Amino acid sequence: MRINPKSIWEMLKATAKSWNDSDPFRQSAIIAYYAIFSIPGLLMIVIWVAGSLFGPEAIRGEISAQVSQFMGPEAATGIEDLLANVELNDSNFVMKTIGVLTLIFGATTLFFQLQKSLNYIWDVESSPENGIKKLILDRASSLGLILVIAFLLLITLVLSAIISILGNWIDNNFGDVLLYAVQLLNFVLSLGVVSLLFAVMFKFLPDVEISWKSVWVGSIVTAVLFSIGKTLLGLYFAHADPSSSFGAAGTIILVMIWVNYTCLILFFGAEFTQVHARKYNHKIRPSKHAKWRAEHILKNMEDKPEPIKD
Image (cartoon, rainbow, N blue to C red):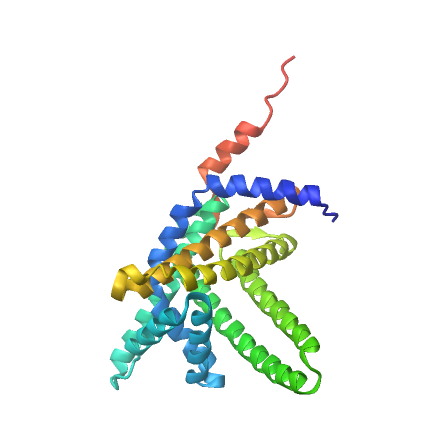
């Protein structure tokens, strides 16, 4: 597969047009709304799973550090307070079970809605005859994605610890030159972890079957855009302080802005993955529990040339 600058530019233009046509701002606003109700359960599940190896406090500290880096210390404090309010300390087994199920339902709702948005981008929809079965499978896949996030958080935590120790040793023995190389390595590894997360989303979350080749290309492009935007958004949060006018609701506003931005990048990456797959004739078809949307079928019918009459 040969990729030249001209073909990349053509794919980016086609992606931008498809992205704009799919109404991404409305889709991302929907996800941001659901995120407010899903984040407590999502974070608690991640802490329970990842904390089983490194301890809950270490995972809480890593989450707080990441939130502080992305959205500032005020948002990190708000997330810490939120987690403190959803602890399940009740000794009653029934109440704990209900609490756990409620958190799982809330956490999976975010990815359930994200799946619907990705399906809309890919022009597919669930088949009506698979209603209950498909709902259960979707919730299970959403929970699986949360476990993947927990696993990637563990990897990030281990890599951060190793690089921190290596960086201190190099700084003490070799000076700043090699230290920059370690920081570059840290950036590349972080980019790889984020790319893996996006690849899992593009491959398993929407109801389409797509080649891994296009998935990897799309996930790397999405990860690069995400890293650039993350830096710009961090500068915006640090200088503009958009939550200052909202008082106690400031943390919620920051989270919604962040999720909104992330979804816009995610949807652009999904569109790029689709454009790339079609350009290079990679496999794309609905999964066995889904079908093409009517709009997609009509569009293909319009694009087909009329038969030549004798």
